[in-house]
Image (cartoon, rainbow, N blue to C red; front, side, top):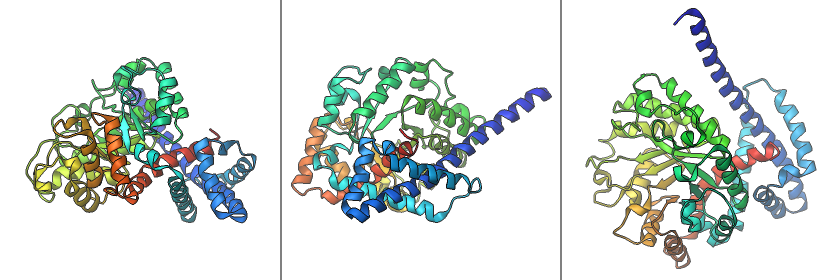
Length: 432
């Protein structure tokens, strides 16, 4: 490589870093804007009537009308001027805390107004085919609208059969989001390498597979690849990538078997995705093959998950296989409280969204039983049951008859909607 090529490469690297820095700076500014504008809006509501003010904040978010409110826009402009005048990169702790408190208040109020039917539906991640009963969904039309009105699911998972080209994909996801009365997780699993279905649909260069990135021994390459993936996923309308393996494996979709190196790669992948608007879901906790080891004995295997949690991963998928060394029996990991509550929540300290592996893996039990067991074990989201309607009715009946408490449902929804409303608040601050 001659001197000019080296300079170009260094310039490109600086450009990427500058772009990420600018993106984070704008996010910080938006957070300050939100704190000022939302606090101002709620103060007016409190003067008139406390409950009405908070409720209206929730309604504004769900209906996407807050951005069109003239007084809120004026407050936003004034707050932006104040925020921009602050030194670049500086975040006032009280402002961040105010934003967090406001987000909690909005989420709590919105949950209090949701009917139990919508709350239960909000725990499910399904395919558009499972939602609508269609064979292969490539457009959001009347069937999607009717299905979302009847079952306000928490997320939709799209695969290669749903993606034809950039325009089709963006139109479908945008229309779907607009049809939902609550924010949706719009998810896919863009791994890299051959499992880059969205990149293929967009006819763009395929990102490197995790194994190829690991072979470079440079975690910066994991960050760069994740950043690129996040940009084109976000550009189409996706906000969740469920394809990040944190397992120690020689599989092409994993970063290898060196715990330290995999941890660095996973951490950078989470950062690259979430810095550009795409939540990261780590899989498959705690292991893909039952080792018979306890959580303490699995310290190396769990290290990449710890690294991902420390990097701020929003979601972790628990495996459908067994982990008998932790559970003490042959209970599938995603149905085991020992795995979910004792290990992932308590031992690793994860307080984000826990989603099950695909519940359709369990052919020896009904969809309703699998869904109820997962919630009882501590899972927040139920991923692709074999029979969505049966699973939904099973969880709803369990709540109605007291087998599962309404507080338990709210606990999971609070985690889910904190992520979703944070994204929606940012959109409101941008005038969308």
